[in-house]
Amino acid sequence: MPGSEFHFPWSALSGGALLEAAAMMLVFISALFLGSVLLPGRRVAGPDVEGTSHTYTLNGLALFLIAAIVGCLAQVFGWFSLSVLNTHFDALFVAANGFAFALSGWLYFRGARFRDASPGMWRGFFFGVEPNPAWLGVDLKLFSYRPSLIALALFNASCAVVQYETYGGLTLAMALYQIFTFLYVLNYFQFEHGMVHTWDMVSERFGWMLI
Image: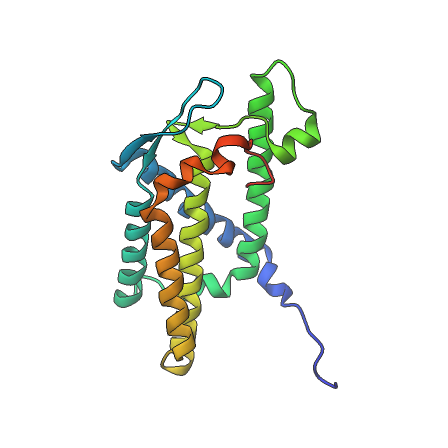
């Protein structure tokens, strides 16, 4: 059909947009990591695997509620609009994947350095070398679900903000989608203790496949 050709918005991936997206992502992940270090939370022991058991601090629910409250307050008082996540989606997609490759590389070289036998570079990069890498007392595998799911809720909320700012209201479908997605993420963090017994946490190494 004439005029129906798709034109990719390359301006969304300009150098400035990518830098802004990278900064937004790093601030977000850093804030959540700092909260994971500092916020109190219930400590639970994971299952015994090969004679070793890891202890996890479960403060993901507090982090999620804080992020939700900050997002709401920022929107209400005009500190910033969540619509920025929608307008920067393409750049954030590129930045997030770049971060995933960089983190996978760091984890591979970190793990290979402390092990006698490496599974091979590509296998180690893809599947990971260490089963439960930690930094500053935070289990990185468990932590990785926090920016993922909290960002999911924030991205969904940004779509609602864009619809409201564009049309002056929300459709029933959008409102229900926001409610159910919020409850889905809330449910995960409410039962975060169950995550320590999943296959991901117990049996898989932490590499690009999970990151």
